[in-house]
Length: 267
Image 1 (cartoon, rainbow, N blue to C red):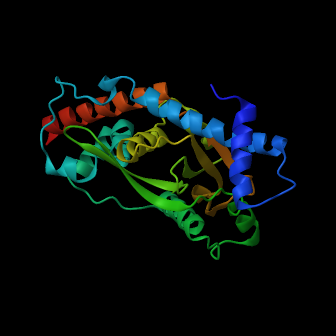
Image 2 (image 1 turned 30 degrees about the horizontal axis):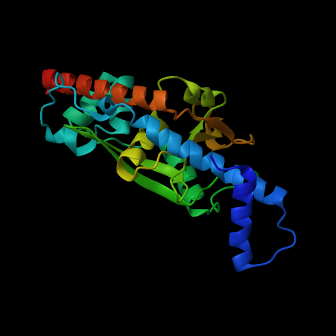
């Protein structure tokens, strides 16, 4: 095993070949090594643990999904899975009867917020709202497409924002006061699905995932239009550890099976 002193010496020799710097102390070099080594060690550990058990990404023989264009076309996607679990009636109307989904004030407001963050353009908001929106964390990439492949279907998603090395992912959410608590619940798995998709496609497992929640003000029933409330954005850290990802993988498969059975009974 290499000693710390030997590692520092090797780094210093490399630096000397490039540039002499009297402020490059051993303590400073040590702090840099510790800072980056922890990240690299954790990434390698996650990579090893995630694929420690081959069965994590193997087929389940008892699941026999039929080929249905309407299902394959959109959704066994995150949106469809959420629709199915929230309301079987909404799922039936949208994905079996093919009734076009029409946006509303809630979805329009969320889209407006998302577009402003992605484009870093807050011209549609007042000064108070801009002050809040500029506190929202923006990473390098936006609307990064992900696909999690299973044997008979796949899950499509779009990461709101992620770092260029894919080690950090963010999901932006809006909602009324107190609604941020919904994203701390066990059944919220959107970011876990993104993490699984990235790992499957690139071999990179994100190290950090979070929901950035913007509080929405206004009350349509009272005739008050939606606006960005003067509340600091809330950051909810999301568990994307090995056990959570493994559980999410099987939960998605189970939801797909339920959707398949529902479709066969109601088509």
